[in-house]
Length: 327
Image (cartoon, rainbow, N blue to C red; front, side, top):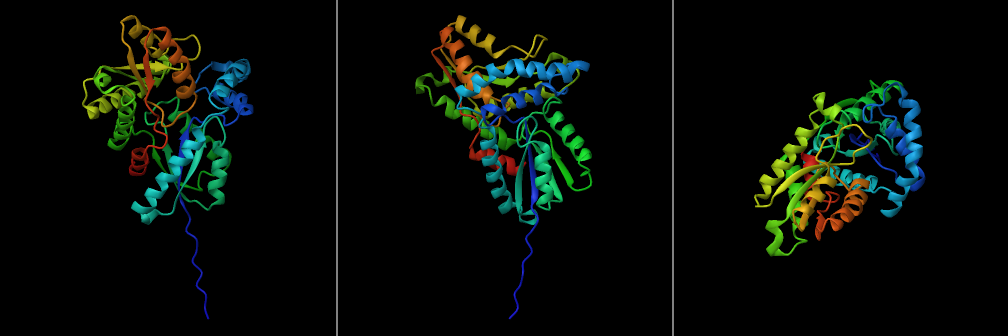
């Protein structure tokens, strides 16, 4: 009697790159240190290696308090894993020639970091990998930083020849992604009374970038605007909309108008219903759960905007899974 042994197929790796976030409160300081010592995200010049850790240490207690208020950590790893698993299920069905597919999380500033995921890929025998940025809109401060760091780590670990890479660095106007965002906006509008929905102001809120980055020709601002425009076109509604910018760090000029200023302005104008749409994020994290929901929620209440709400983040949106697989 002969026994046939079927060799296990080596997976095609889908490397999902994102900023990441601390999953627990003790991880906050290391996350901030990694963030503030990245010259591509927050350039500080020759003093970066000294000033960055100092700033991170000073900011840690306040940021720990913020994470404590949203449950004790960032949910971005949970949502990235869910999105990766669902995307790979679709890919296994629609692209059997490259199956099985396996996602690997590559966070820039929190665990799992690039080195850990590269070593996991090598242990799995991976030879073919897709570097898939989870920043839909390109910026040298985000996607660029992640890809540059990937190359440095491949070089440091002597793994440059171990994998054959393909790159997906932006997908801000992909029809499936636009449909996913539009569907979340529709869900957000359903929080209002039917007779009020057409009068709700849709406020797309994106993570801001330094004007110095914009002046260098970074395409992020234009790509964010293109996403918002396509979403509004798909919604085909009558709602007013505006693009605002959040999460400024430091005192240098950043892209505006700030989300905070927009909220205060609409309050002064007497508007009551404003729907915040986190346009540059593929899942919930500190910028949605704390900054928008808590900080901006309080500002809106003080400004007299009684109907300030946020649409659900993409998180477990089935249209997003399909878009990611299609991309």
